[in-house]
Length: 76
Image 1: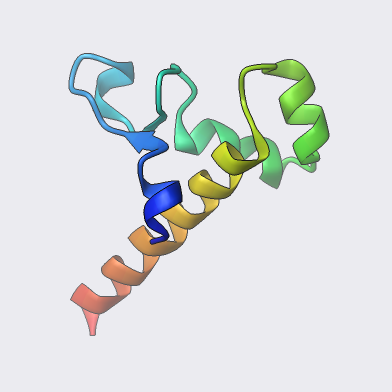
Image 2 (image 1 turned 45 degrees about the vertical axis):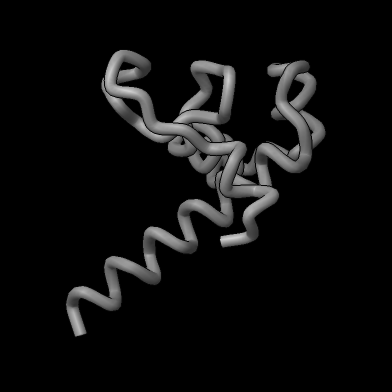
């Protein structure tokens, strides 16, 4: 994962039950992925969450892709 994006996702045991979140926010990676999957555009998501940036959304996608690669690597 791109180091510039990697620092944007954090996991803290006391925040959102330890789910990966956008750094400094309580928005989870899965929240962002759900919004995108439901058809929301980046602009619509950022309008609902003004502190969220395009880079944050890309970090969520990169985090999910990396997690998928690791999952597939353990299955093979």
